[in-house]
Length: 541
Ligand SMILES: Cc1cc2nc3c(=O)[nH]c(=O)nc-3n(C[C@H](O)[C@H](O)[C@H](O)COP(=O)(O)OP(=O)(O)OC[C@H]3O[C@@H](n4cnc5c(N)ncnc54)[C@H](O)[C@@H]3O)c2cc1C
Ligand code: FES
Image (cartoon, rainbow, N blue to C red; front, side):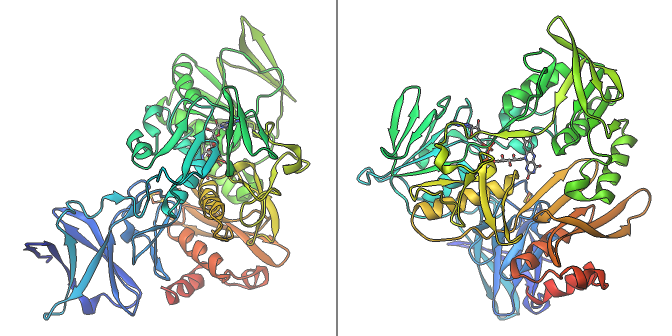
């Protein structure tokens, strides 16, 4: 039974007997009727208390993992420092509260909430500074997406008081792009991550509908339609755009899903269509098929996909096959091992799509056939042959004043041992943070473990980097449910794991990759199991 003891200077919450919160464990504490308001931890040396919910989408942290002073969110692997409540890795953006603990003479663990804390689980921004007009430094960020926003936050969190300008070619504050393909019912305008007052409170200027047209490295200026803007340090985080297949351009019933404006266009198109064809069984195409079926079960949805099994290359054959079956259960049809080759048009509309062995009628086409990076305005000397931006471990380009992060950045990954480019939300967010730190000269290499998720007919997550899918561990979850972990190898090194419906695996792998403790290929093929790794994880809590 939890007791609340009001004091003049705050509220003390009884978090139960200290002795039963054993080393390396955590416990949820109820407050004012809210079950997971607070989480308390024992790392063997001391007790800590934080808000009980993840600041990303509100997951109860008690369901996640506690390791090495960090609590991992059960849903998408964000983690927070239990001493300070500070967010350590994305996709969370804000911090959570951290509260003083003590043990009273009855052996009860007491959490002391300051008087002004009405909701201990509320999200907060810790340690951001405001602009100081006497600081004349100008930092420019090109791109108001995942990496652009976290870079600005990282600068203000690390005492940068100069000017920050974010240039974006969109007409909206940075928003939660990943939700766009997962739900077509929602109001996309409500996906903005930070409201206007955040930018005014911390003097972060967003120049909307202001695309960068060029960069003059010598003059240290960014060129826009309205003139040039000087910079002392520059971050380029211009992301990707959807690839439009040749012949599909400009048709009124063909759409892509990349931005809020795309999302707004899709809903009425779906509602007025019977036959919907999705070109490309990528994550986006599959998520979109799932989202359409979730809302409009009667629509005919067909995916044209070039691989035999969707996502085979990225998640492995077992997980890709499971996802295909689950989508088929919802009525989604697949034309696999097929390539859309031509489009038949009438009155500026697509009426059917030809593929290598047939043709399919369509009232609407959703193109999910890949993306292209937005780097045409960047000086060639900063680009690789594939037009990605070359950066070192500090996310710094060949010019010391220019940094790049997110989808456009080709960086050295300590986890794969190679240079890679990644198109994932959390990676872009964490790279934006790293870039911010290094624009301030702090010399912090990018080390966070790459991670992505895709919640759809199957709960899928990936930790690490891509490699050869080599071995799959499976478990029967009862009924039709199956859980799988597919290990990806590069030589004898395990570089990544694809996870399907396996609760708890993501943060354990995240933590073990970080510590270099994921077993290699020989050990996994020799019988090392996920259960063994769970024990390993507990040792470090
Ligand atoms: C619909 C959708 C769903 C996704 N779902 C997932 C998911 O579930 N999990 C996951 O890990 N990843 C997901 N991703 C990928 C993820 O969103 C990207 O990897 C991430 O947004 C990349 O961040 P970024 O900052 O590099 O670029 P972006 O977030 O794309 O932001 C770039 C911004 O720069 C702007 N811009 C471009 N050119 C210029 C210019 N010249 N001047 C000024 N501004 C410019 C763009 O308009 C955009 O606003 C999804 C992507 C999409 C499109
Ligand atoms: S809800 Fe915690 S990371 Fe998404």
